[in-house]
Amino acid sequence: MPRRILATLILASAVALAAQDAPLKTAAAVLDRYKQALGGADAIAKVQSETIHGEVEGAGITFIHYAKPFKTLTKATTSEGKEILQGFDGNVSWSLTPQGANIDKETAPESIRRDADLQYPLHQPDYFTKLELAGVTDFEGHQCYWLHGTTHWGKDNNQFYDIKTGLLVGYRFQVDTASNDTAVVVFDDYKSFGGQLVATKNVSRSGGQTQTYIYKSVSYEPLADSLFDAPQAVKLLMK
Image 1: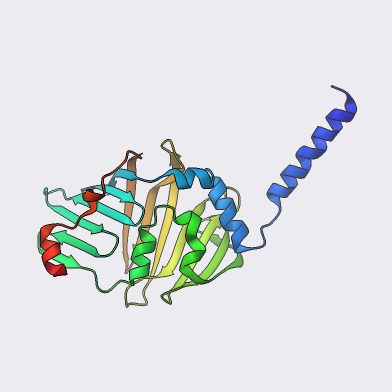
Image 2: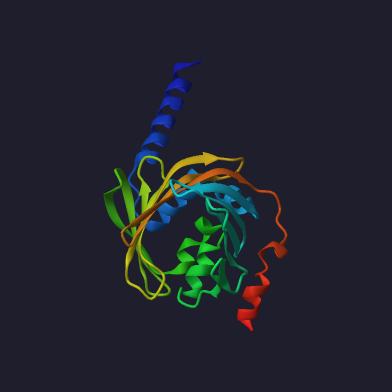
């Protein structure tokens, strides 16, 4: 290869690496890099149905989580064989336990809808009145870009993205009920199951309690809308 061409290629590579390592200056830049780290906007948008099989570490609980855009259903089974259902049909958030049915009237409705947004990485700013780059800080042993914001429903929200990988390390936020308690969620062990990267270890700390959710498998086969219909006991409460 002629020296001139080789020198040009080396220079181009050096410029590309320098641009990649340049500190990010805005929240939008951090979020754009996060989308790329997950696999790109197209890979995120492609997911229209999701099924997750997992367990709550050390609790003897297994679960299956089904999701479509703005609809969710989680079926959890305890070590005693008792089943707990929790869902969102696009309008109502509900749960069904051995103690009976319940409709969630405490959590901010927009926060429930956000949690059911299957393409949330594409829409994050839509849920905030303010979301800004607050600087670089250590979070759970990672050097992270720190995004600080306030949700439309008035809750303080902090997001932390690994400087090296661009991936989300975790959140620190005011819980979305009437309480002002603070919760921390940490995401780890990202894997691909044929689509965007998924954090297969999620650690949640709130109110002095810690729970670790482990994803065993993730699949993207289509799901029927009827799967997310509320059980009859919940429908009676809706009336």
